Image (cartoon, rainbow, N blue to C red; front, side):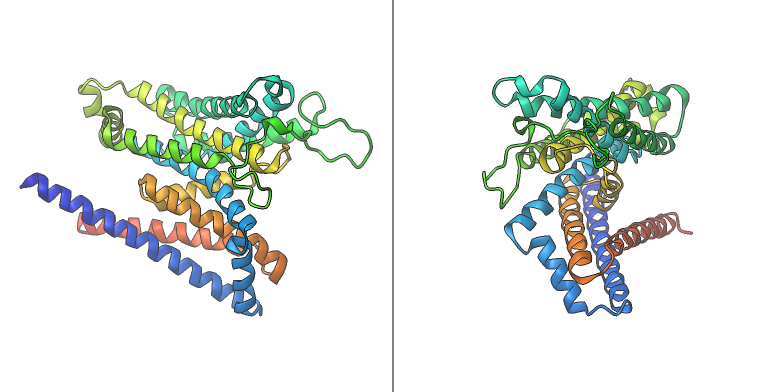
Length: 360
């Protein structure tokens, strides 16, 4: 009877979390529409421009899904770390490190000369390892020194962003040769064989192989978190580290591994962005995807299926916002406002639920 009551309570709590997330999204969208109207732009024009950019053509749909892949990987990394009560806000830096590693391997690491599918697989592995190491550094600081991982992962993101700037500004590193004054501070375009192959083979719908890879990883992480001993240990570490240590669970290795894996997913997101969409490393390569992925993870409420739904939402939001600015003259910053409102609404709801639970 106790087990049934516990399961029922968990289901009710999950349903409440889902409804809160949906309400937060709806409230944020309504505020965004009100802001558009206050700017004097006809709502019909803004909505049509948004729809055209988000799903108005096969190209727009594929571009939105490709953007959602990077956001989803960062969100899954956030959920994975959060299971151990760790907050990885360093997705932006992990994407940046992944982009650097994938670029270097594609252009100068010999990946383009490998046989079969290895030319695009090896840069992805390099990117995942680079992001994993970047996340693992925060794990070491947390486990050995006690540094708050929110602070360390956030500050390391700024370091990684400036590393991208350094790489694209220096010919010794990744900047393309400066033949004239018009040369932009960016890398050369990666070879075609290192780019992610398209699922359809049609450039008019550039949906690439990152989609099945990301879905497989999402399924694996969901199974690991909910069906394996490792997932149970992470939950124990998150709920009560002292009790987990007394039960024989190695706390330090768990922290190191989970932040490494979260960083690896962020690095892989960077390779998807480079090899599947941008094809060259630029100064603003990460483009805020890491911070958007953080919002995806928060909105998912600890659920991998929730990450997939949230990532699709934000992928389409980003595509629609870009076209809304181009076609209707509405600043794409409106989308950022919507995301910020979602975060504030979720934070307020979580605070209210905790107070209600404690009876205050």
